[in-house]
Length: 327
Image (cartoon, rainbow, N blue to C red; front, top):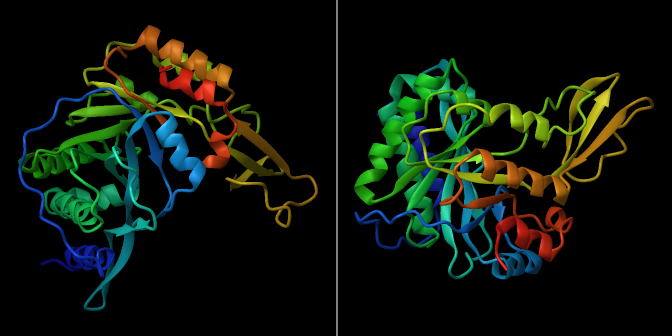
């Protein structure tokens, strides 16, 4: 076994240490995709507060897109011959149980740098990714897994490598009756479709966050419109809408970083500027109208990003209902 594969497997075992295994996944028939309210959970510790649990119940959220781990580059010492390989990182830990009647969709985030490193051994890495996902789900008793999602901001230069990885992961999951989906950025609508069963079109991060003249990098409807006038996309799509906010920090008009909560005033110097960005409900309504006018959304799910009580408090219960399209 190659050194990087040993590390991948070792980290898999550490992620599930101290848990009692349940029955292994058995092959089963793939279920037909049924539209359902969904939401992402993008924290390293799964620990829901009462407000978040009530949100899932009140808004009939049936799918929880749960980030399981990232795949990132790491320096490996193979008999004093140092090189970089792709390894798992920031694996989720569970402090709360998954609410009843909520299906978990494991999500694996892959950096571009890791994707390049995996391109020489897609079959091996695909097997390791699929095995790690199923182990985490099994040991934490997350129920039947019917779909796994890959999240990667692939480029035109890395498209072939990413598509090859997607095909390999899909082939590994198929015997278990598990479908593969992946995230799709707006600009990727003009490219070929990845070899997956379904895509989630990410309707946010549309602007240039590093430009001090950008008004709202999370969502600008004019940016969205520019991508929705092409040919139909030959892949069934669900749609992810932004319900998060952040603060963008600049020093002398140079991008310095993000604050996901209130800005750290100890870091802010005289002359620095902080741009607060969030998405108003009226913009989400306009976005939804645009999606339904330009794209086929009859059999699509709406997925919010992400499950965080502080950000979701910016919207009323009725507004969330309207976004999800239920009474």
